[in-house]
Every structure is written in structure tokens, then in C-alpha cells.
Amino acid sequence: QVQLVESGGGLVQAGGSLRLSCAASGRTTSYYAMGWFRQAPGKEREFVAAINWSGGATSYADSVKGRFTISRDNAKNLVYLQMDRLKPEDTAVYYCALDRSAGVHTTRYEYAYWGQGTQVTVSS
Image (tube, rainbow, N blue to C red; front, side):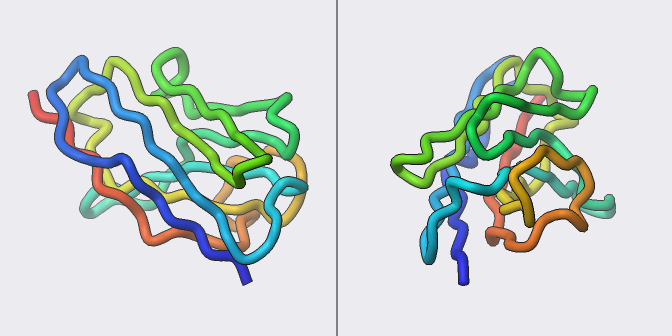
């Protein structure tokens, strides 16, 4: 079993920055891609960003491209999401997820394990 725990969420003003972290435990996640998703009230969970097993390939949703950066530290079993120039529409619960394979995927059905989520609120 794999446990994923997100941290770093909070309240920030529009234009500000936050860095989310996802700590994995239970077994090594170094050989699997990781992703971030988010879910706003009344909306479907949507893809935000993903990174392959080595960190050499990434993918972003169009809505966050150029503002968010995903990265990973395999030695520490950590994945990060640096969020800059935040907008009120970025407000959501953000979830970390472990892919079933090493490559990058953008659909949630490709992910086997999920964290509990961390709330990000951006005020206008």
C-alpha cells in the first residue's frame, strides 16, 4: 500500500504563490509517474499537472501552464507543485496521485493511489 499526504495549502491573495508538497510512504514511488489534480465545489476533479518517473517529462493543464511547476525528489519520495500568479479560479482542493505506470497521464483513471487533499483558497 502507498500513502500520500499533501501539505502546503492555505489562503493567499490573487497574484500570490504557494508550494504544495506530497509525501509518499509505504513503498518506493520512484518508478511511477505522479500527478496533481484539483476539485472545486460542485465541479469534477480535473487534471492539473503530471511528471514522469524520472522528472524528465511533464504535462500541464492549459489553465495553469506557465504559472504552475511540478517537480519531484525521488530520493525523498516527494513531489511538489509550485503555484505562482494564483487566481481566484485556482481555488480548490488539490490532490496528489500516484500513476499506475512510469509515463505521464492526464486522466484520473490512470492513477492508482490518492492523497486526502489540501485546500487552496485564492482571494480576489
